Length: 208
Image (cartoon, rainbow, N blue to C red):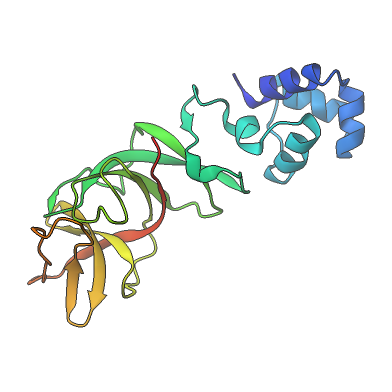
């Protein structure tokens, strides 16, 4: 179902005419008709007011129900704006360096994760392993900003070295990639060579 079809469905359920809806939004009836016919989508600034008038959530209006390609996640309640569909492209090991798909080449996403953010440079990765399970248990979806590479003490990052990646907490003195785990068998990594910062973890969805 397209956004235009969702607008029409919600409007009809509210028993509103296109004219009534247009008046409440301060647009023309022709604009409502063009939205519903799929001629073009509403501007992002109109999504919030449109959802409020139609008594639906902005995330449903923009992306559809949970059975569509965007997953919601418990961390989005209450819903905040703006909401962005972030591609879930791969998984990352919270442990030793292991192979991972190149995050700079998302290709066909496994699915999309709805995240409240105005940042466009986000990717989502599923956590495997337990070296950071005190913060990100296995199965957690982490959201990574791949342009945020400045290392800040105690923040979590995805690191890559020779095509392999790991999720770790950065500690600066001495420089090290540290586990944050209930399992004492995980060891701190003291990189002997330069390690690429894929990006900083900015959000997480833990209920999937």
